[in-house]
Length: 179
Image (tube, rainbow, N blue to C red; front, side, top):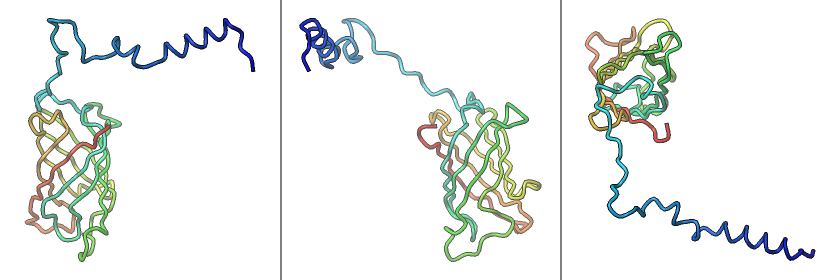
């Protein structure tokens, strides 16, 4: 294939303008004019100012010493509540087979519904394994300086099979990056 001289020059100019080192100076954010300040990084809002929509996403759950039959890890998905826009809803997923050596706890399923609120840095969620009754409660606080990406608190088994003196089980929620 033969190129005409004008087409060769146009092709050469297009190729030259695409060379990354020639365009780097105008896009290099590390080079600033003398006397200019670095761009400001927005600090995390105080935990009390985190809104429900900032909590939407996928979370890792870590329990400390869960009761026999419940695993020490789970995942949680929080979304906008369908009826109450200032609330959250979602699901907690547990691999009940991961609680090795213990039969699954009656009253709990691998996937349970969640609904609750985030107000003034406090997180309260009700859990339901059957979609009717509350089988667990989550009460936690947003961790200061975590930008709404970490919560610590306690989970309580409130299912019909829970003993009357069911202990509070400490948990930590950490938001999965990318959400």
